[in-house]
Image (cartoon, rainbow, N blue to C red; front, side, top):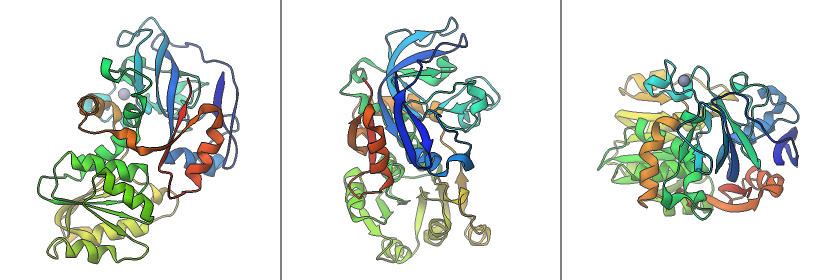
Length: 360
Ligand SMILES: [Zn+2]
């Protein structure tokens, strides 16, 4: 079968690899119909060995598809169901899963990545493939409702696997409230998702901060009421001017580096909540922001999205048409052209926000 894998630093390939097989009784095999390329995939392949990525490792953690086979303990999905997977497979029953902190699952892992790979077995699979093995299928797969069960609707659902759910995580944890102002920093797919998700909480103003005019125009279509380009404008002044000099009550930082964290602290008003979704600080250490936070009674929330905990909230919102995450996909390519998809994402071309790969 065709599958995308890591070849060398910043180089991915699509090749013929063995089809996955059921290993555990709780496994399912999914025939992938549509897969996403995530900004994190760029990080994994750019950093390669430093992040534990080995040559030949299969890539991709966002996928929608059709259940092809199930182990004997799988009862939540059946063969033939169209499903979306959580980017992280989770056991659904450990100490943290019971608290809905599924990203901390004691036996979980991220598909197509070196993160927690030991939990998935020796052949942890990537979703940018024709087939993928899903550990803990009962808790990691979600059967799609009839109205979202076709190849035409795959793109609406696919971002729930990770990027859109991550944006929602940011809106929730920055406590976006009706009538207030929320600032979203970052104009990539998660930033655009955060703009869309913030809109679900009816804020008065959604101010989108980015560095690319075309992507900020995209943010307007996603629901931003105001946009500001940090390359040419003073972001903190801009936000203060729109909030009677007070600043924003909610900030979603999808970048997470020194610049964005300082901006977040400076433009937050006392009592605000900041959700840090970006992980720029993994690659370049940042100064601890505590003194700035202390004098403003700020809440700073960090952490990886708990996809499984949100899926039953978000799927009905997509089904009803309240949100349509398919707008994130500026480009859709056949799986065989995954290499070009990575290049489009990596070039940070202003026209590309996110790439989908059609696998079948
Ligand atoms: Zn768990």
